[in-house]
Amino acid sequence: MTSFGLTSIGSRNYYADTMFDATPQGTVGLLPVVEAAGRLGVSETRVRQLLGSGELRARQVQGLWLIPVEEIERREDLSPQSGRRLTALRAWGLIYIAADLPAPWLDRSARYRLRRLLEQRGLRALRSRLIARGIPTRMRAHPSLLFELSQDPDLMLSGATAATQLGLGLLAHDIVEGYVAADRAEDFVARYHLRASREPNVVLRVVPRFTPDWLPSHEAPLPAIALDLLEDPDPRAREVGDALIARIGR
Image 1: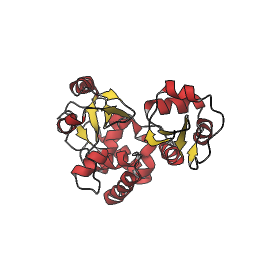
Image 2: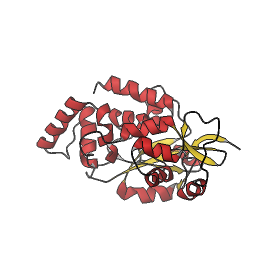
Image 3: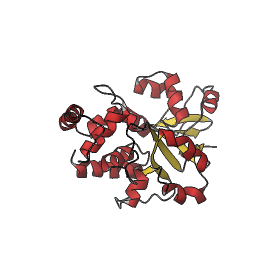
Image 4: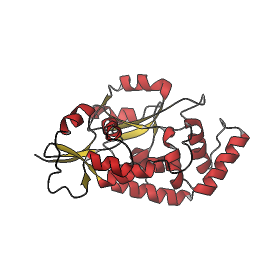
């Protein structure tokens, strides 16, 4: 049987699938792991790690996990092109500068350098350097807890959830995406009985607490929402992210 649902997979299942050498017919737009590795310029082991962590998603076709081309393209967009990735402190500083918000945890020199970087490169081109703002972990909560979870003061909403609440052109009521400070993450996960899942309804991004008053608001700044939408596997969400980047004008 063929499963066409897009999902992340665990390493155990993936290793079992490596016994298949031939790609099944009817899989246009889907790549086996060896081709995905070549396209991304990484090892097959690294591709398996990305699949296991949910950073890449795959479809199961006739017992073989295959990766959609659009997933590869999305990952290519996140590959560092030039310059080192910014630390979480500086990544969020740049996001706040892009939103015309103060970033009091930065000194004047750092603010100046980040402002210049933003002016020279633009927010979209800097995506690969801003990953430390919070790598997504895909989890699942009981659906009855989603509303309560979305209102939790320890969570700063982002991605499709924030776009829905802010009326940015998405309707995403069956998933909650947001940021949580690292020193609150364990309690947050326990409070809502979250568990890693191939069918997530919670996308959690953990951020080191680099300033005492983090998290600063119920919804993330618009540049962070836009960046998270651009990483969403849903094409409609990415369209909204594109439009939001244009609206921000960065």
